[in-house]
Length: 137
Image (cartoon, rainbow, N blue to C red; front, side):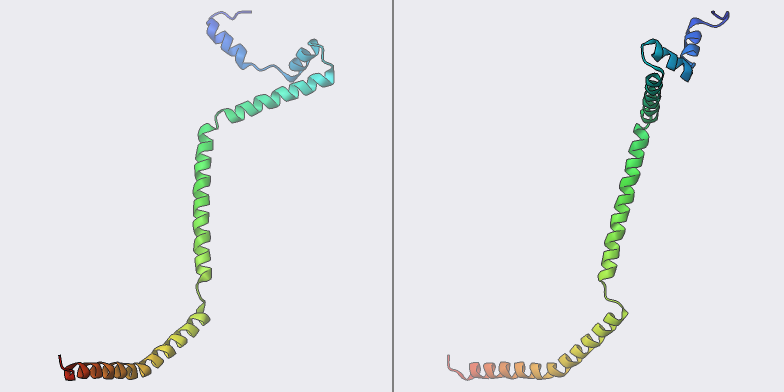
């Protein structure tokens, strides 16, 4: 059975690389006392477990990269949601126009009242100064 020219390590690797066929696996489980259907189910379970181990064995680094990418996408999404909320809270064109008219009228009203207020404050100041000058020390 040994092939001449191949070292024993290479022969062992070759035997390990050759996977048993499904029929060989079924006959193995049948030799352990299982009937055909139970042996088939056992083979399927073993193949699924092996497939799961192969899939999950090399994913540590990929999972970290995917988690990092997902975290960055979530961060960008939350920033966009915050920006969208801020933009929605800003007044539109009509509200801005109405606020401009209201503030203009307010400034115009203050502008017309301001000289009267300044005049009244000036009269009070002059009265207080004249009283303080006239009173004896």
